[in-house]
Amino acid sequence: MYEKTFPNKRFKHTLEFLKKHISTSDTILDLGVQNPFSKIMIEEGFSVKNTTGEDLDINQIVFQSVKTDIVTAFEIFEHLLNPYTILKEIKSDKLFISIPMRLWFSPAYRNKTDMWDRHYHEFEDWQLDWLLEKTGWKIIDREKWTNPVKKFGLRPLLRKFTNRYYIVYAEKIK
Image: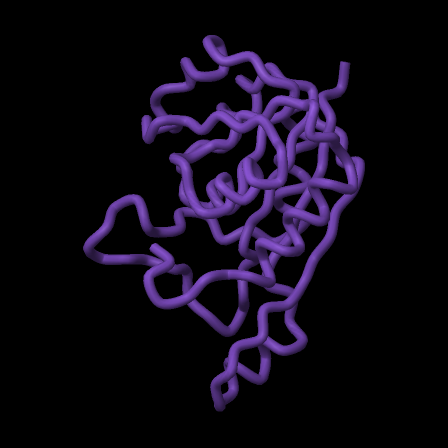
């Protein structure tokens, strides 16, 4: 997935946001297979277990069988058909989610050759907030940031000041 580019800015922001709210003594279930960012979390001292590639829209057994303090879902909810069910099934009390935000000047992302590499949801920030509220989560902190690219044109210009990523730290309402 990161053959030609590595999202250094996104990873830096995500790691800083994570460190702001939790310690390395907390255990993490990171939704999605092991990836460059889960490796970074481990290198930073976090105890991380990843899901194994199961289709989380259909199979949420991992939430019954793996007990952790925190669930992270970095750049995964936009790929799921049914994030509502997943959010309801999470047993951990803390949750970190990041998403690429819907851009009015760019269509939804779809890789025509890889079924896992496409976006079903293109969220705006308020939509993710509402989804969390409806599933019993209270947002504690949130951040947005841009993702400028080193290209010329209208879209690259818009990316310089249009927020592209949104990250949320939420706790389960008891």
